[in-house]
Amino acid sequence: MTNPSTAETRIGTERELDPSWWRQAAVYQIYPRSFADSDGDGIGDIRGITSRIPYLERLGVQAVWLSPFYPSALADGGYDVDDYRDVDPRLGTLEDFDAMVEALHRAGIRVIVDIVPNHTSHRHEWFREALASPKGSVARARYIFRDGLGHDGELPPSDWTSTFGGPAWEPVGDGQWYFHFFAKEQPDLNWNNPEVHADFLTTLRFWSDRGVDGFRIDVAHGLAKRLPDELPTQAELDALPKDGDHPLWDRDDVHGIYAEWRAVFNEYTPAKTAVAEAWVAADRRARYASAEGLGQAFNFDLLEADFEAGRFREIIAFNVELARQSGSSSTWVLSNHDVIRHATRYGLPPRGMSTTKAGADWLLSGGTSPVLDAAAGLRRARAASLLELALPGSAYLYQGEELGLHEVPDIPGASRQDPTFFRNPGVDIGRDGCRVPLPWTATGPSYGFGPGGAHLPQPGWFAASSVGAEDGDPGSTLTLYRTALALRTRLQGAETLKWLPSERDDVLAFERPGGWMSITNFGTMPLALPEGELLLSSVPLEGGLLPGEATAWLQR
Ligand code: GLC
Image (cartoon, rainbow, N blue to C red; front, side, top):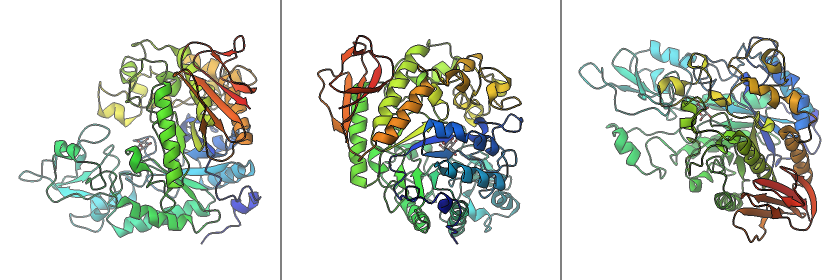
């Protein structure tokens, strides 16, 4: 089974074998199609990633998480997987993948891959077999098929709507319908079927044996489902408590799946890690993060919060305590491939608790209304990122945030790709605006993304935010991230934090072990800093004071 002589031992120092490497890692999310394109076809690829390892090394991250790179028709940006144990030919080959893992490991960077177990793509061999097989067949039992209502099954089994908009049932022409949480190209698997369990264990071993260090689990709270014979209506479904016994979401029995996976992860030395993408109530998150389960779970609380001291404090205190109780470490996320970039979110009017939907109107207006205060957004984003990087636990960074990139709001409809755009005409513009290929140079084809074009149009303002423009500029966001990540690696101690008193309620100050202090001024009045050596600040001090909407790190 495991061949520990692969990449793990090639890097084999004690530090690399540290079983707790993930607890406080800075993990950089790569959206492979939009990171770097080596062959000029406009789509980022595996060799592109390998070519940028010096950049990642210089940035100072401990791991990368790769969004899906598997064969896919890209109905949902690769989250519609045709084959879980291969590389999309447009992105490369398994040999390219192995070479990338080896090179990343040589650079001391761990590799986390995305696993999408809730649904396959409709082109997956299992689903093709299900469509070609009759009602009641073994092939259909791997998915969630139901008879339609009406005389000939011409009506859907229920009025359920999909997360991406539109109906959640799709007819297959013989009176049966299949269920999909997301796009119709993403049929949900039936996790009550032992064959589904066995196949994913094979997939986890496949990538583990190739040397990956961990997994990010897509829609981890959705796999286990119990559909009653008589289906409730959507309204009835929405009214049911999400207490572990909901027919579709966050069921207690989902943890049986992760216990099986944990046994596989623990076959390796060091054990493979996993982080759950589980959009569940905060108090139900800990179970996904338990040592018997996936080990870590995303905490999206900060990503959903406005730039506001009280809310940040509440979230931080709650999650640090939650991590302590569960034995896991906290995770912090400000941006990812599903939400509006945080520089932009913070430059729009505050939205209370629904910031993932924040800016929906702004996006729909093509970025014209309300008016974005781009400079204020970036200023707050830099302050929030510096605060985030001082917190105990791991920080998940999304490609491009280290450049201070804004969301791209004005992608023409004809160029858009995200299914949420197509399934919700006029209501949801989709997530393409945070997935535009990265600008590496200030000039040249596709701003250095590759020798050809870019699969989503890049705006002219990308030039000023390119790696080329920011590299070496002491005031750039790239320099801020590089400096912060290097300091963080040096200063990171035990996973604790002590709040420091402040007379102002728009100020958040805390100290980490060893006297490392982080102070954020969420207000606009300049702030006198406590005694200590200034390590770094998100904007220069003015007259010895920390300006508004800024963070400083000090050493006591
Ligand atoms: C997760 C992914 C998102 C994808 C969805 C369906 O939420 O982050 O990008 O569309 O799952 O797989």
